[in-house]
Length: 363
Image (tube, rainbow, N blue to C red; front, side, top):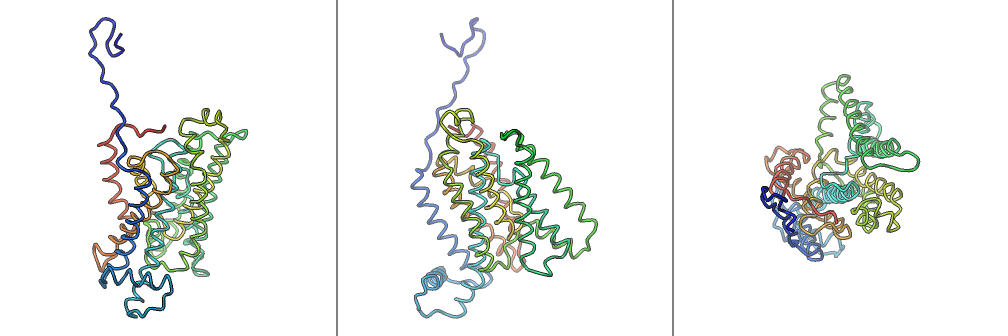
């Protein structure tokens, strides 16, 4: 008997679920395309600015300086590309890579395409740490005081959310999510409270930090953040198989031999390292870890062995291009990069949400 028709024949026939669409891109092809896009993004971002440089000249400076070829370069071009623009571009790529990879992992852990790196309070904890440091004027003692406080706040928030959600050695993802929401609200309230006790100049510093910014980033910023981001990203990619098994549910994953609680702990640790290091040097930059993994999941599928690295590559290019727009859109006025990611990210994400309502496959 046709299951779509009632016994009385009065009800109309129900529509069958549409067949799963073929993926637009093969994963290996996506890696190649995204790598080329990243190279093009880096080249464009180093060539375009107040002083325009030919793309080939910018790429030539990068290659010659990186490989130490000893080829003679134009001193002005070399200074603009290597000293001013390239460090900022590479920091943008590193932060985008960290946020997008972390977002893909969190979406896999929570089995929800709307999850993002700050869902357990990491971003809010980092913001609180930075704001407290600015409030205490610790930056007068060291330029690294605010980034260090932000990184410590991010790790503390992640640990506290995990501790609150863990009972008898078991962590419920729903409880972890609620703990993250509660802590985000608490840290936001603390930040708002501090607004009332600072002068206008300090308040402006706080607001600018919370907007997210890549201006003035140097090679030492890249050197300090890179180890934490790389450890976090490599750690998450090493857990790709476990995340794939978790996508079918925790009970099924346990039946297949996955130590679910161990995976949760390691995912949270690696996400905290990567995200904490990223926001510690740039401030709050949203939507990268939300929309980029979501788009990649639609393009190449839910296999985390491919989804994590491709999300990282796409996130790097996305943030580099957003920062380029922030620099040149209203030149000589420079926008905060976090503003651009929100302006670009929100409409595009809403378009995806309403134009492709069928649920993303998690199996």
